[in-house]
Image (cartoon, rainbow, N blue to C red):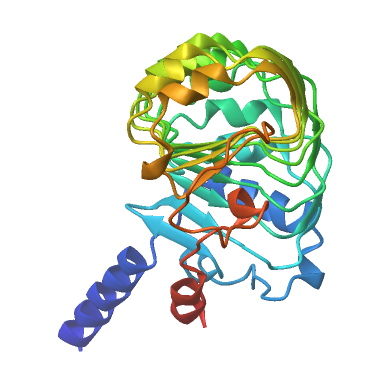
Length: 296
């Protein structure tokens, strides 16, 4: 009888280890997210009585929440300030929902976050001034929201950034020269904002950039001569601005481009592929099919 009890005790202990709970602060942050974004009306809801690792779109590793993917899940309402408790989070994808309110300032404390995707929501306010603290970020996608203000200078500290898409917002001011520090950047989308001033010459430092979309702004002056250094560039759209001169574009070999769009009608370019939409920067790729299968 004692052996049976001992066996049951070991079994329960093992089961407890297998279902080890995430820290209370992390669990509460998720509960706050659920409550503030109208979880009862989500397409795929959470059963808060079950272990966090069983909640749809939540990935747990080593007893910590490391990923949240609630893409197109009918989230409505503001993000909670308590998101900063998810200190082990590496990916946050809340794109294509109905999020409102502002990006919490506390999000800058998520220094392990690599992917931040909040596109296609109704988020307003400004970008966190200290966004440069999020040193691990590799992708920021915030297009099609109602963001205002300017692009923070501190964004130049995100040296691992490969994708920055702030298109289709109400961001104004000048493009900060600190973007020239993002030497790993491959895609920069600032389409359809209210940006003005000249394009910083430092953009020429982004030699790994493949896609540059600055169309539909109020940018002026000359195209920087440093654009000739962008040897990896395949897609460039700078039309519908107020540039004074396009002469420096003649130094670029447009035959290597898939898309090369600007306003000077005096030069006709041959492209490999003209089947290109102005919303190219808004085309996103997700692994949500895998996520759906994992959580059903």
